[in-house]
Amino acid sequence: MLFNSYEFLFAFLPVALAGFFLLGSVSRVWAIRWIIVASLIFYALWRPLNVLIIGPSIFINYALARSLQHLGQEGKVRSSRVVLMLGIAFNVAFLGYFKYANFLAGAVNDAFGVGLVLERIILPLGISFITFQKIAFLIDVQARRVTTFTVQDYCLFVLFFPQLIAGPIVHYREMMPQFRLAPCKPDPEHLAVGLTLILFGLFKKVVLADGIAPLVSGIYDGAGAAGAVSLLPAWMAAIGFTLQIYFDFSGYTDMALGTARCMGIRFPPNFNSPLKASNIIDFWMRWHMTLTRFLTAYVYNPLALSLTRRRMASGRPGFVGRSATMGAFLSLLVFPTLVTMVVSGVWHGADYLFIAWGFVHGVYLTVNHGWRLVVRRLWPDRGLYDRIMRPAGVVLTFVCVAAAMVLFRSPTVQSAVVLLKGLFGGFGVALPAPLYDRLGRLPEWVQSAGPTEVLGAYYEFKPLFLWIVGLGAIVFACPNTLQLLAPYEPALGFRTGWRAPGLGGRELVWRPTLIWVIVMSIVAFVVALHLGGKSEFLYWQF
Amino acid sequence: MTEAEILGAFTRILRDLLGDQSIVLTMDTRREEVPNWDSFGYVTFIVAVEIELGVNFGIAEVESFANVGAIVRRTEALLPPS
View 1 (spheres, each protein chain N blue to C red):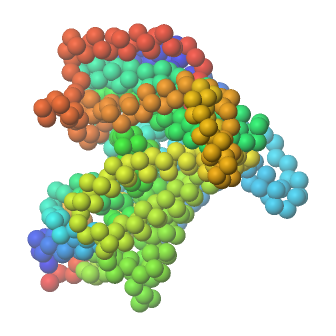
View 2 (view 1 turned 135 degrees about the vertical axis):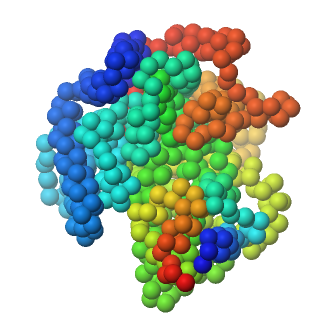
View 3 (view 1 turned 180 degrees about the vertical axis):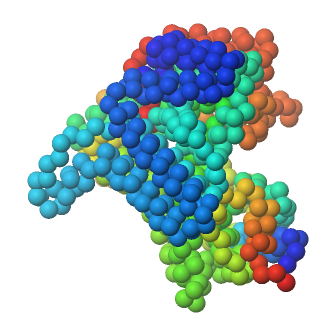
């Protein structure tokens, strides 16, 4: 059941909320139980088998957590570490079997030609998100950051339907205090903010992301079939898909936040205008923020900390400020960064292209860090640097992110290679026919001057160009949903509004006023005209 | 070391690390509030603190510090009584 389906919006969600509020007026415990049952139904409606697969793993994790809790109370640190390692190994193996067994068999076949054959393994929906949350919970219990929990609390934490399929990836310690304090009855502010988030999210998904998607798909499909794509359509495919996934994931996140907020629950921020980032480090602090938080805490930090400590213990210089050496930079920053981003790629999907995408972002990040070290010496005037490099950095970051998205979107390795070659002009420069005709003899001169071939166009240039301009304007010139709703803390700790140039320093924010009622009614009307499609959120496949 | 002395040492370490002499840390400072103090710089900062002050943080707890004050208090607890 998609968030953007009639079934969810007009049947499941109203019934789930009504049950929660009705039971909440009698008993908080029953309201929570209702949400757990509703979440199980939500999950089972996709494929009932999902519940049978995930259910046992939830109870094994609960048993492991109980064991960690007892060992912690008895002060048996070493034993608790062993149990934690077993728990992590179980969850990684669980994820590995369902998500990666077929890929690994294929990779072995590719490498050694041994012809391994596996039955088609069903991939339970949202398994990557659910597994990461379960691992984080075990770590929290072992570290004694979570000391009390019940089976009901744990089931609610893992299954809560607004974040079950595609996040945000939350911590038990940031969710449970909210559930304990949630009013469990209709609250005008929570409902108004929640429904506003849902409407904005729907608009982003069904109008914007789904609007540009067919035009983008045309080029990706065509590139694979034709075996060639020229410069302009290659970049339009890269940028077009970047904008599509931006609004798709942003829309999903708004809807997840809004659905939870209707019940008085706030999720942590997960998406904060990443394409406004002025460098790739900043980009990852704004894109899928809870995944970045997880990978940083549980992959990068342990790896970087242990490597740094080991290096220091052996008497070699560490990676500290201006005294950084190349050896320290490579081993203490480049290596853990690349490992973390490859893990990120693998987490997204069992595919060579996702691994390559993660690796490319790892390279971007290390270049960014290296640049930061060098630029302090080369360009000491920080004010001047910021004035020039901030806008330049936004453009550069956008171009890098868009180019890497080709790896994320391409259906096959072959089409990715074709598109990447096209991005660098490997198949010449195609221009739209009307533009080509107006250039007079220029194309001939260009062709005679170098190896670049100038071709007439064959793809739908104008509609895709208009979509890119329109969506780009929204991305770069408008506040995001969290900023608009900042006075009402739409996400945990998010209270920073947006000051529009020309508004005299005032914040442009949503308020329950007549103007906003009109605006949101228009949004709802446009959404209603576009509802009913069957397009899944891109992040639901992970 | 007192809390104020530890906070002073933290400020000096972070200024050197990020090359920014304008940084002023308080007990309430959160990492997101300091320009360029990203997650990568955070690990380096933690290890620099370990080296300079002779303490050793648990890997799991590194992720859980909510603000600079939490790191200061944990450091104070780890330091041998003077």
